[in-house]
Length: 351
Image 1: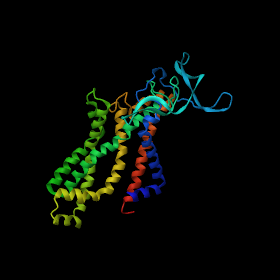
Image 2: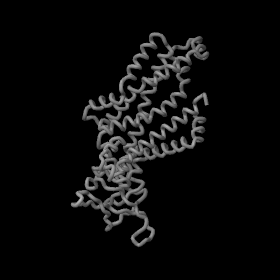
Image 3: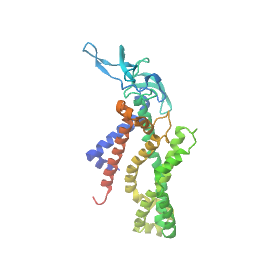
Image 4: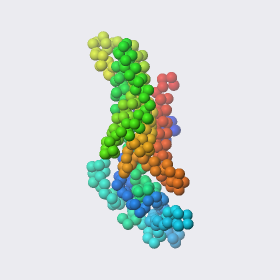
């Protein structure tokens, strides 16, 4: 792993991708502290407010502590549009490492310190608000925890099943191998995304978002293991003929012991690459389900259900800040793919 990391850092694009993912996951870990508001915050009078403007020069042209103004909502009877203008009657200075709304850090430690806040009567919307007056920046942080972790959780279920299934099938061979592979091919033939839609749509409506999240993880894992097992089985077919496997047989090692202790560790290079390249597909699957309204449900946030609001043409034109979740999904998927491709090149014995 040290060699792989050193080689990754030598590749310019992979290094940038690692830094980007590191920043994203660090921000998600400290989401409660970085977010100006908690995940339950909502101000219905501030629906679709544009991003707050931060000023560092006052009306006299002098440098000032950063401050912002609240927005006033007005209805334009000529254009029939809701418009917002700055209420310059009162400044609200930005306060750093200051007390704000109470929360539990990591769901355990009670805290109320936020990176940046304003006075209680002021509003700070760094990326504007949605239709319910919820801070988009705060929801991006909380929603990212779901969108960016679902892939790894699915892999923890998928890879052990695929590894063991493919290992047993390849090592035993014969009729056992034929039956196991035909079953795996039957699973692979199922159109996964449509199956996800069907399964997600029949889930009970009273389920919490956490329960739906865990079920989506299980569903993603149960339909994704077959392709992985098939590749592992092909690798095992060649590895089981090696001398060290024959030696393990000679000393009386059990079949399962040979598979787990001697054969499967030889597939580590492929497993690392496969894991890295599989995470983006699970991020996209969860985002797609949530975008269609079949995944994480409101008021809980994920990047998918946040992006759903941006599908309206008027929102794309007049409220581009609602597209931010889509941009983050694109950046995260691209970063994972860059790292996966680089690791594959590093571990490829032909290089």
